[in-house]
Image 1 (cartoon, rainbow, N blue to C red):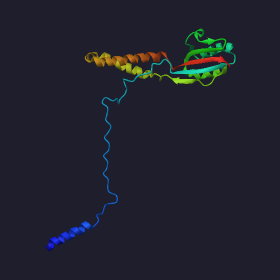
Image 2: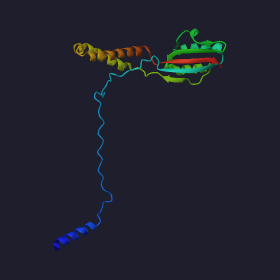
Image 3: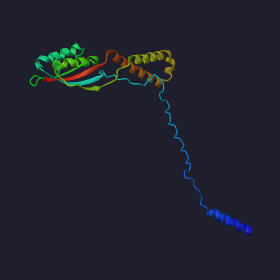
Image 4: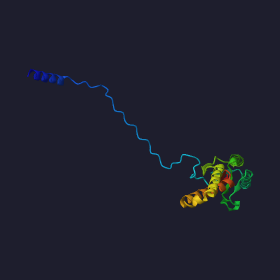
Length: 204
């Protein structure tokens, strides 16, 4: 009985002692987030066969206004300056909107971008002209890259004609890519970096 009483007394004393709690308890480390899923079929190599290229006929479109010192005398000088820098009107000058009473003339022409800055200098000799607004239309065509792809695809069509005949969907997709590349090559070969210039001419 004494032993049981002693055990009970010790148990009560132990319960009365305050329990020590660590000041900075260790927190469980959070598990790292799972890796992002990889898309099946994602392109990782070169070249990228489904890349599309700009077929815009102009690299940029410029819009500007020129106030001439002498309208009737200097309009022909504007056209001469355009032609001197490799430019050309998009139609005969008589077909553009003009008003002889108000002394206004609209002109639209194309010219190599490399000559555009020099043309602005010459036009400013004829009158007042602020910097034109410029809108980008498309990136230059990398002809070497396009022609390399065409050569590879033409060789595959010849060397693997029998295999491609067994997979008409894949053959059709390849044909569409090749058609796009051939069109891009044609545009890139005949057009250098051209800009289209919309110019409003008036009397100062």
